Amino acid sequence: MGGVYTQEPSWTLRIVVGGGMYGPSGRLTVTGKARLGGPLRVVRAASYTAKSGDTQRIVTAAAIEAPCARLSIGSAGPGRVFKPTYSATALLLTVV
Image (cartoon, rainbow, N blue to C red):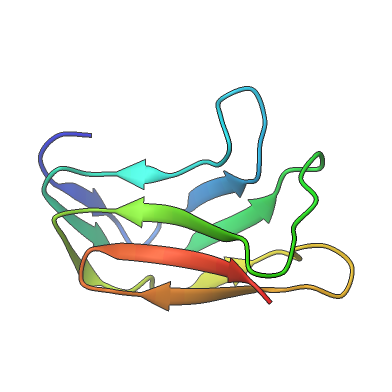
């Protein structure tokens, strides 16, 4: 996406990780700033078998102005969870 992405507080950004017909993972890529003002819901694709250490880059931007107001992360599979990590330009999920 070019320019700036602004997520309003009442909007939910839903991202599916781990496969499907559109590639290895859903993601939001913005050439400018990403303002994540609303909830982010992350779900695992049913066909995805997460392995410990797998990392998914789900948001990439020139700058991320605010972490998500509410982060809802589904299961990474039996006995596994997604651990979020923010940087100035990305949001990553790592399976632990």
